[in-house]
Length: 133
Image 1 (cartoon, rainbow, N blue to C red):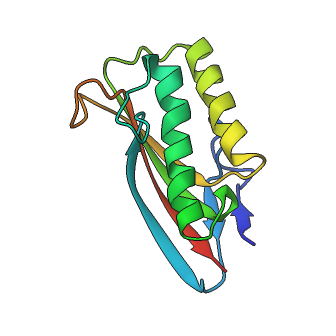
Image 2: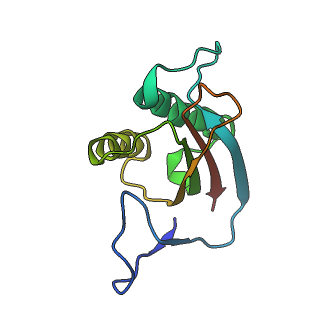
């Protein structure tokens, strides 16, 4: 579906991502607005790991509504608040949640730390761009 561009003369990949993804002309593009760690009833997940699980699940809900899967994702933007203490152990746990959602697919990704999100209880937000080819 996509052609990966992870050149050997580029910096090592910092996690389960790709440096570049090329796609032929898409039939459809889907822009997924930022999703957060809150369920459909408005309950916010307890802690960053639960919020990460809910956030990825919410991305999946939007994809399914469009007839797409995580394999259609080209790019993600992941935003953590400064309240998240990103240790190596936490990074590993968050990468496991990410790969649990994406499987072997490795879309491009940008990860940023921001002072806060719209609701101060939210610790993570993920947006995405997906394509059907």
